[in-house]
Image (tube, helix red, strand yellow):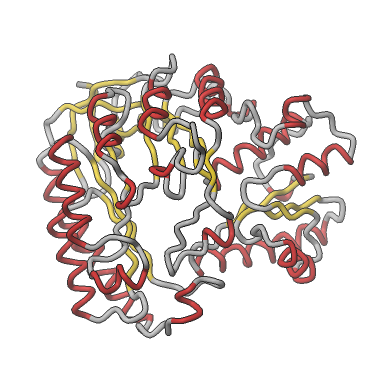
Length: 424
């Protein structure tokens, strides 16, 4: 979502006559887009902000804007940020470019009429990226109202609301005309698309209509919530060739007690049954998930339940995070952060090691097999890079294919997290 927001800002700035530079030291306008989903991400922001203070000292005319979840949507918090970071000129809430538009207009920068009026920019791909970006993220659901006890997103990005499908589809048609061949529809819980908007289509139909747009070769969606994946959604993926057989479904824990404390709305058996149903309908489906280790109250036995669930479900990727209390969340206010940092790290390493071993064995069977990839980029060495429909990264030697082409390749080497191939 932050990447999609930054893309829109870049498009707006280029429309106002600015152009990108490679080094922040040479910039006249600098925007930092922020994430605070974990403490580690927030700490990186503060380090970067200290660097921008040095840049401002060297160049007082430099305009610096801060955007995203650190800014949030609560006005009085903006005042606190202004006091803490007085060298910042603009504060932009997540996905909100209106303050930037107002600033550009006040400074006399010309904006196209449609770009000056709309909350979402009608042509989000910056000119400097047109014809070069093959995969683009398109927001469909903004904000979140689920309020898991550990999650700061509802407090920083606001309540859930779906964008009009007509706007989304018009944006994707524009992207296809600029050379984009794969779109990823985004939402904190993307499966809930349309449920807050009476009369709007729901996610399965939005995916089908996206897949029917000329020029779009692949469609993905993320992130899903186990409680909101419907049989209709699974059927849409199974029956629509352009919809990639790939599901990103965070489970967060394998212990029912921890899932209840997180207020996730399902138990481990529900999750396992969901995955079994997806694989029965789509045997080739790829699966990724998220795990939080060290949630308050997580014992060794509870963590063992998570580890054994991952062995049974055998996802293709796990993003593992160590629990960190986030301001305003229920868990930070009511639950002690009682798992030592060293124990969180031990649990993270155990899950990562098991994942690496499992994927090494699983991917070894792919050597000699032919797979399809969408070429996304060409590395300086000439190697092509792309992904399989089930989202495995592939590097292709001795290929002349150009970005945006679908090609068949034969796997010559398989590691746990990537494959090497040659033209089939």
